[in-house]
Image 1 (cartoon, rainbow, N blue to C red):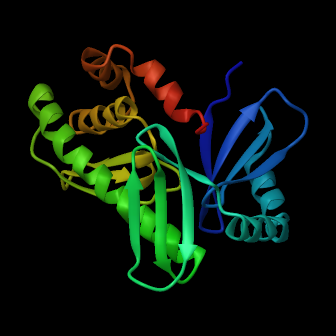
Image 2: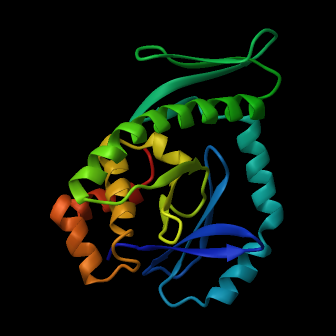
Image 3: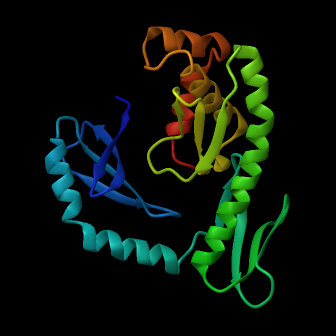
Length: 224
């Protein structure tokens, strides 16, 4: 049985929840940003899970502190892992990237500042990708004009506000391959026509992306 992700808000923080045919509960602090993922038995009560996560707050903070001290040695861009080095030193703060060498973030005063700079750089690359991809799919799907933005999100890959014609895309899509970004684009544009995930919505997605289920499954898998 494949586990399906759902999301639970605990004290203002969104936690990814995966229900599995297991007996014990497992909580993970996911690198590089410390997002929370919990695996629980199939019929566990949501309120009990929230209380259990609150009881783990000290452990969560300890794990997040460890992540800040021991940053990952690689970062993903459009589905490809690259070596990463963050170098706190003097000089202009800049992200240097080479297809063969990977990422070097230098001129920052701390690892946190390095990650903020890197995320901003990824956001710029994602924006370029979306600026090309969105008009193509709007034309194919005969979708109306939209405004769009990129934000770091912990629980969703994208969202559509039909009343204002605004789409929001998760900054972390920059880590995913272009075919998965394309799935999110088509998914959110389809919401301009169908508000809910009913048969008509999925029929529209399938009309343009016959392999949408495979893409959705790949998007749900962790990197690496």
